[in-house]
Image 1 (tube, one colour):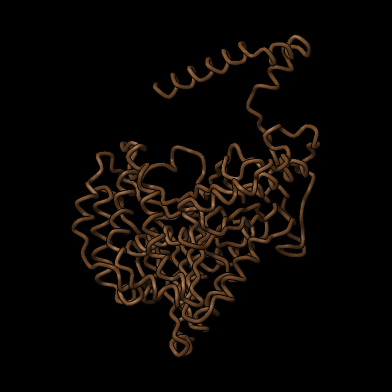
Image 2 (image 1 turned 120 degrees about the vertical axis):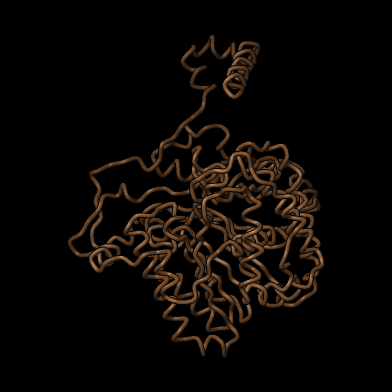
Length: 482
């Protein structure tokens, strides 16, 4: 195949470069062939290796224990060329997406975030600390991960980079350590959920929505006057559709429906809103065009979406024309796996809702989705769109520049809204603000238009069948591990 031929060609170029290097050949003669093979290779480090000798008790119950192997490192990221000497040299990807063919194409709703800038030095430091905690000595650290001194003129490089379009966001990396290590990501979410002011808009979809703690904080936000939209997968669209997992989701959504009924007057009096949705998308038969048609119909029939987002069109003929049917449409239902959150204050939301750029913003987003929707599309077709989306977001966000209290935040990473992700697993999220935070917002708007919004218990039970009492009790016991 072309991919295999490309790899063979790249390996031969590497061998030729090593053979032509006077320094490497001199060192090979001095230290031997084994040294050279160790020098020029891909270094694979397995962290948190399995060890059945360690068991933890007392978390689930007094007598029930489980091996530390269940405390996995769930962080999903990749980076290259990150350097303290040049703040804009390297790149990193923060994601909730796994590595595998099944995650590609229209049947897996997932998102990744490409990051450039000086904050990536924190990522490099975190990886270095992980390797040291696993027994690696600093002297054995791979050269690209070793600490580098800032070069002369670093401040000038930093200032020049900040003047480039798209580099004015503020971001912080939040990393949960595996097992009993610190969990600052939990703290970051709790702070945002509990301190967003009245009138804020909070959108949180997730593939494993079963944390009563996070849900309780969001109900509290509604009682302070926030508009909260929570989306979980229907059973047929869940990437992890086990009995225990779906049982926990059903119980949480049931309690949230009860809370919305019991506290409805108080939430309304505060000016808030709690909307609960299930991602229940049928099998793809007509490419992205089918999704757009469903979006048009759903938005027209969902009053609260039109009220919350007055900039939404009720018909999108130009976008439907862009979203032609895919030649490789599949029969299986798409799975909701994206871990993207958006939070915006009331003053920001009012300002951006009046922006005339929304039709262009959403049409550009749909063109981007169309260029990447199916496996038969070329990645080259999608190259211009991220910069275009960022430029439009800059223009919309500029309307908020002089407005007091205008702020927006977005989060992208690996952590689910579940107890296991909170207490046991290693997780990473990137929290960022500024114009860049509006790009995930347009993606969430499209997701919300393809969501079935719950009106009562029957609408929940139809898409997530209620578990029996036996499995409901077991799901509570196993909540930290599923």
